[in-house]
Image (cartoon, rainbow, N blue to C red):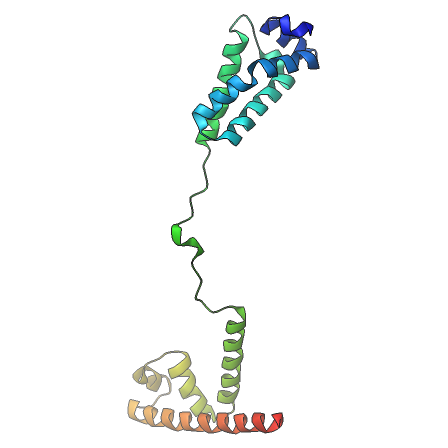
Length: 189
């Protein structure tokens, strides 16, 4: 192996001419040294190996950027590794997940939500079959969440009259739901 006896700057010159043997010599000569340097900076074996691999790839593709008049190969490559490590440390890392991240979610699932929506649709269908004022009283108070006083104002009546209307509306709705439940049960026999 002739390339083992060559100086670093001679090898880099050969690498610029796409000499694979010269490139392999530099990798053998310095790979472990620069991996350890990157590992010391990053404290991550895989990341250190990736950084060194990228740096050697840059050597292969951009060896003409090495100027032996400015620095030795080892100084130039050392700076390349250090800069890549610094860049990696500056990168924003994803935030760590909190300890309770994997706790169970007690919110209703899709099937429970669908069931609730179907029940609400059935109740609304029954409310729609009530007399218009009774339906409006239930919607204002139970679904829109208005107070007795506010619902009475919307319906242009006094709170006592609204309370009485709401009570009759609930009884009518309850009767319709019982009739509907009885018919559903009768249909399943």
